Length: 125
Image 1 (cartoon, rainbow, N blue to C red):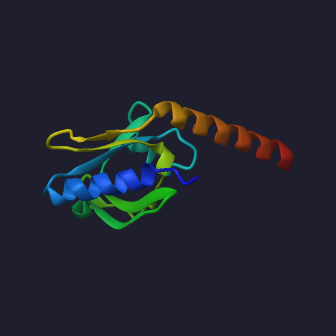
Image 2: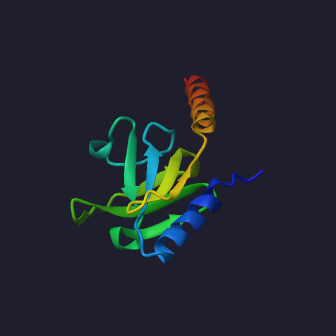
């Protein structure tokens, strides 16, 4: 079954933008497959502005969010890639309206991916 999270993130982002607010997502930086500049990690999570004015090449699929982001008013030519299950929540900066997702489900997914990586590593030896 397709995870509903991507649909909810898309819907909340659209609603936030339609109300002229600023959408932010909270991402688990330790989740397998997250590609972010490490210097911007904070306590295992990072909060990212996903307003169109702060991004280039935004893509939201059923499996991931990817874009080029602006940090310190400059665009990095770094491909930001976030598995959808690494998103803890989405909210409007101005009023904190949004949605938080089941972190326990994230932990299970992270654990399963870590186990698979370890098995792949052992098999490749």
